[in-house]
Length: 397
Image (cartoon, rainbow, N blue to C red; front, top):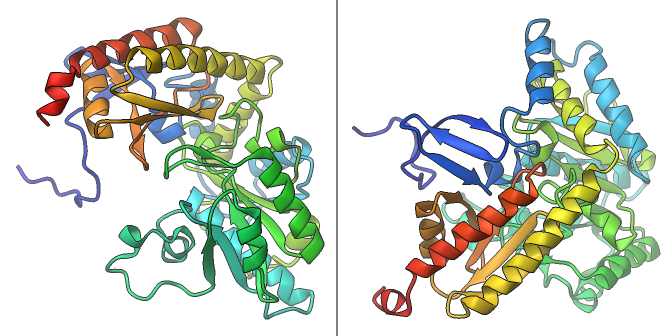
């Protein structure tokens, strides 16, 4: 039977009927250790009791009213996000990371216009970036493969090498509105920005009046062991996008901004029908309940350190398969020597779910609630997968 779904994904022949914690179960009884987490989205794993209870309660009360009215759940969520960042004064809620990034571009351009600089509209982006699949965010991403067939790219986006402050400085012009980057590039292979580079970018923005716009769609909400990845560099953005883990699997995105940017977004300048509705914000508040609990982020750091140690040992054991470990916290990449799809399929055969990224990287992004035992079991299953990829088999590919 031909599926009525558009073939935009190469879907694995697996369908899950339920999940619990770090585990997913098929209807025929097979269970898989989930180190994909809905592409780094199921921050609390599956069927987390607090998230389930709060969503069930809210579903029985109210799903949606639109932003024509006050939404107390959104007000509470915004207050908590502002309180737990060092830069943000207000928040705009939407439905996805791409929407958040689109809104971020609109906001920085409008802020410059209102400051008397309407010509400052260009956005400097990084080579290897991924900011979403809308038309403007395809241009911000700049990947020719993603742009093919969708017409002339949206103008105003320019690209420079990642982690190269000299190239970034050279690319600045009087028309530059913002520098937009991910603290760790996820889709292009878990490529982390150097701490000194991020500090230099912040200083360059301060020097030139250019806004620093951070895309923390994948790196934020505890994924690296701090609430937001930029905290590791000791810097502050001017504006930031988040999504993925914020709703624990329920769609929600957000833009956090300083007042000098946010004040330009007056009534009618931007909008969303579904964004920030009661159900979405209830989910996000439940996620924050867990993340902000004492010791939670420290536990993420500990699990990340354990996996780093175990994976480094695995690289030594399988030098013909694994070349390098990348990332921070529970955002981990393994650069592979054979095609990464081969390694991913072998892991799946061992009932370990992983996802891929660019640069031939296997991505491990388990729920932030993953246990030490599950981390060790994941490494055992990954080793089992490696054992099936003998040199003789790989040479036959």
